[in-house]
Image (cartoon, rainbow, N blue to C red):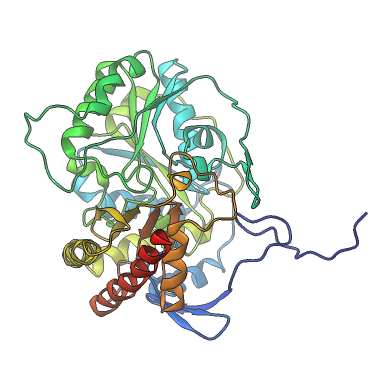
Length: 442
């Protein structure tokens, strides 16, 4: 037996013994403090921190919840009921004729897993449909829906080579990634996105279609695309599950991604920003029509920590703060300028293939080594992908960004970020993309 001491924590996306490059030891608003004393702008540490860090409303809510008794969601809890009323009454205020009921979960992964299972149970069908390069979570059916090579729970070697998890379910059907983009709205009579040609056959006999908005981190399909796809799903008798874990609660400058469509989902799943990042949490929201379809049947599923006091307190505080501070409208306003600045700046960099996004969710897709393409890179190999060149240079100069995959950089700042900080992010990114241009030429 080896006597070599290794760190106790098996760090995210690292081998035993590997440590993250830095520790985050503090934060306020859209600023984070690192263990070496530096302060950096949070331009994309995680999409859950929708209110930034240590928002007073969230701090107060979590402190108050620490005094609450905890009972499982098999028993009544006034705070849990209040959170449900706040979520449906505030976040879904524009969808009052659509929204039915909500069930809380511990994460978006669990919410997606349970929503997919419910769809199978209600329809009596097995096949499920997700999109190429999708990510919906890391457990159960949600993991099976997640066919993005970098986020599928496999094993990757720094020296090269990977091992994928074995297939556990033959009921999945994968729709090609969309080619259509929301950046340029298409006429209603425009030809369908070519990726939809396979949709009718894939949806035939399916229990549900699950979609996220921003599939693979860079595709933001148009309203026409989604209406045609969802129309085909409903025509085939399949349910539509809209995964709003990243996009829900205002990040796109509207309450939910699905609101740019004419079609409406049967089920909406939430996570990440649902609790402002202050506690783990997820939710399954059922449409009024779906509730009527359930009738008097009980949904027989139980878990110890669903609807925990800290979770429901954070949900109420988050949705109220977003409303009271006008953060959805603000995301639309500052996001429009941020997007223009990003596109204008990126046009000068040969390493940038495209810029896509809305509100305060943006992605830069880069050129580079074909081995690092989103559809094929598993996180293995010693060569540094351009996305990590960009994020490393940016961090060294004062902004924390995310490498979503080998060719994709994600920008998901908090909705409270100041416009001056966003302008500084563009400046820092300009220098980081210059470093990537040089690396691509080397």
